[in-house]
Picture 1 (cartoon, rainbow, N blue to C red):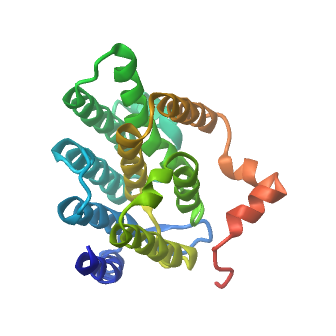
Picture 2: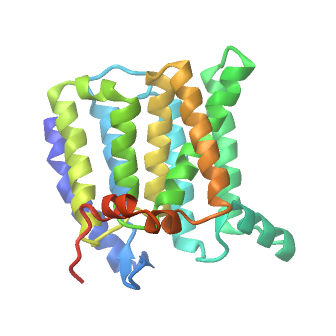
Length: 265
């Protein structure tokens, strides 16, 4: 893992340079074009971990790898070919109904549903409740993470809080594996916090996909239901209001939102 760790910086910089050269950028909330290369970096970090991790876990098997790969591919296609309008699942399906043409958002939602069904059947759930729970986790956590990705480091902070609250088992990993994760977090923190690169749909949904798998394999039933219901609520709330507007109305949330984000233009 130590050798793989040293490749992370090169991949982060290389993907940033490539995306910038290809003009795979999106205009951020400040109006600046930013490469959405961090998703490719996180996808690489996950793939490298799957093949070189000394830890034995069902997370590192074919179907989870297929799921994360599919989520990243669907996300990068949406980033490259998608448009800034419409917003939200309701908006995408409404436009597809009116124009009789599926948007990239609809295609991404459909693709995510198909790969989720395939993965859940491969996991062989032992009850209807387990089947529904897995469906909710694999569908809604990637979508929920993407909903928060409207300002720098929001997904980073949410993922960190999520780990602290629900996945403390990660802190008992071998030192080299823990160092690997810390390095990935640090690179994303610096590049996104300084507005050099961003996650994009491909990065936010990939982070969500990885978290969903970790939740399924490394948390209990009660925790899984809490998380599933939490992201169900987030999905419905996002169709009715803006998370940014909620954050702006509360001083503590505004303060947390600005932590780590560079104020330099």
